[in-house]
Image (cartoon, rainbow, N blue to C red; front, top):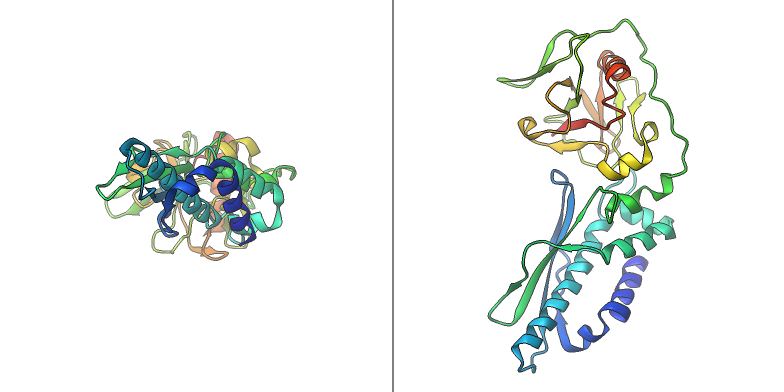
Length: 292
């Protein structure tokens, strides 16, 4: 609440002071969404020009500025709801770290308009703004991962059984067979099939084996790469994925943990993933896809 008041005061007092006096901003706090499959946060805003304004061009400009102001407020609401880890959202980080709040305020000023503004006969205007979850410039991740920037990078764990190999193809669904994990073939990525388990997307997922050991997390990865590309893609249709390449290693999740945000795979599958990664480096490249 403190952050929202501060952000509203900032926008009203600086960028949109004149607009607030000459136009109407409609309250539309639910006009937004977090699209994990496309990797964006978006919000829509509505506004109208001053009702006594007779000049059409000026009234439209006022309505446009008011709509953008509304969209920015709605986008700030959506950003607060982005889940960063299983236990923390952007709202939690903003409350704990002033620097996160400062970065959120800064990137909100650089949002891009999606498509053309819509003007209606009643004088109102509608605009949609969109911000990427990940990216090296003006993304949610720039702010979200600030608290973790100086944490020491940890190597991937060693497999518990170095003699493990996988030689069978894994079917994601009936009639859909995706990439075998045959020793000696180069794997381009990892697909973890979590279908039916209720996996919930987060910006910083962790893959665990079923003894509770994490085998993949942000601490194992290059910080700048996590900001730019994220740690994984989420999809409901494996045939649409490109991140894991055309010869991915495919494993089946046996459960999800930590508020249903972290996939769990068997120890033998985890060992196979770690062994294959030592050769092909797909985890280092964040070539990971979760099928929901």
